[in-house]
Amino acid sequence: MQVRPAYDVDIRTDSARIRRALADAVPRSFWLDDPGRPAAEAPVAGDVDTDLLVIGGGYCGLWTALMAKEAEPGRDVVLIEGEEVGWAASGRNGGFVDASLTHGPENGRRHFADELAALTELGAENFAGLARALLDHDIDAEFEQGGFLAVATEPHQVAALRAQAGENAVLHEGDALASMVRSPLLRAGLFSRERHALAHPAKLAWGLKRACLRLGVRVFEHTAATGVRDDGGAVRVQTPAGRIRARSVALATNGFPSLLRRNRLMTLPVYDYVLMTEPLSAAQLSDIGWTGRFGISDAGRQFHYYRKSADNRILWGGYDAVYHRGGAVRPEYDQRPETFARLADHFLRTFPQLEDVRFTHAWGGMIDMSTRLNAFHGTAMGGRLAYSSGFTGLGVAATRFAAAVMIDLLAGADTSRTRLRMVRRKPLPIPPEPLRYPAVQLIRGAIARADRNGGRDGLVLRAANAFGFSFDS
Ligand SMILES: Cc1cc2nc3c(=O)[nH]c(=O)nc-3n(C[C@H](O)[C@H](O)[C@H](O)COP(=O)(O)OP(=O)(O)OC[C@H]3O[C@@H](n4cnc5c(N)ncnc54)[C@H](O)[C@@H]3O)c2cc1C
Image (tube, rainbow, N blue to C red; front, side, top):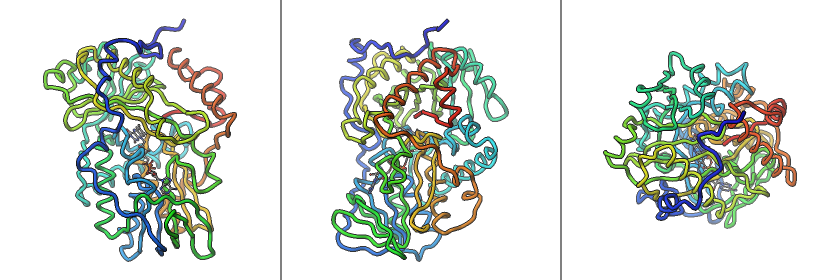
């Protein structure tokens, strides 16, 4: 028998309280809507010659430029960004900094059981390296290591969390849970202190940009690469107002259409949506009992993530993971009123104590889903061009690891990173349209059914898993 879950798609969009809660929400990322947003650097004009060209000014490109320059200060490094540094996923995400390189341990076990121990260790090193780099480069990204609480809203999720409890993860139920967060929907919570942090996503991107500039990286914004071409000993990159000749190139363009034709079927642009509330008062925080500085995520296959900002707003995102037919990346997809209404509804069911709270911001962003749900890497043009993408919804920390992988690959170095099967092997490509949209809808429907069915995979998900094909945000 199917039991009605705590969250479902059966929402009351016309409910007056949802409309009231969303009435004043502005359609942009709270994180980017900040007076500290730095002015854009000038675009490329004319011809540029460089040792290393990084294409893409999100975390992945920024870490690549920064770490390459740190490793070899004499090397000339140029970074070009089509819009402004951090405007895309890197300035819109939830800011959960998770050490996992595999979109969580369960997905890691599914795809890389044999090297999960090494991946966990490398992930922990990368996480520690990220925390250290923020100090070394004086980046104030509101980085807080307050831990992470995975919560169960369904009985089967309680059992799953209980099974994961151990030395580094403590299960809380009843009063112990209520002392961390109070909600009529939450049945249990698994708290992990290590290897989880929160950050202000845009301040992280802007801080990395400042660090790059300080070390002498030449940054050009509003400069889209329109083509890359192998030119014997170098790579030629075309931009609207100038050409760049680079001895090597790192492609860090996430799920945007790849400049490499071979990678066009490797990522699926999936949109994830987020709401941000106004700052909560001390009384409101005490009503929900959430006084710690940890982030929360529920344990459903379709999950929400929620966290507090430095000024005690609640960011509430996730659940819907939307693929728009045709696979384009378009500004109009950044807004989806039906998803915002669903998110607001789920928020109010979770925290009915916050009935009077208003949302101030509502936005969406594109995630570069790969069928393994974690990054893939590789080279082209005789090893002169490296690429990394496919982080899916867990790239805040993993992009830094990917940057190190690209630097290794461009140097032709044999390292603990480049020896990973995760680096050497590619995930399955995603079928093109017109197959793609119905396939995604089929899998999304199967995921929603699994959530309603005690977390059990039905035929569609079992078949997808058997082929190594995962879908998530
Ligand atoms: C709503 C949302 C919530 C998320 N929450 C989390 C979270 O809590 N924790 C987590 O770990 N991850 C999260 N993620 C994922 C995370 O944000 C990404 O994995 C990460 O930001 C990827 O960084 P990136 O540099 O690869 O991509 P991006 O930030 O997308 O940067 C890529 C850049 O490349 C530029 N570009 C593309 N093509 C070209 C070209 N031809 N020429 C020049 N420039 C180009 C783009 O303009 C863009 O700025 C979330 C993502 C979204 C959208």
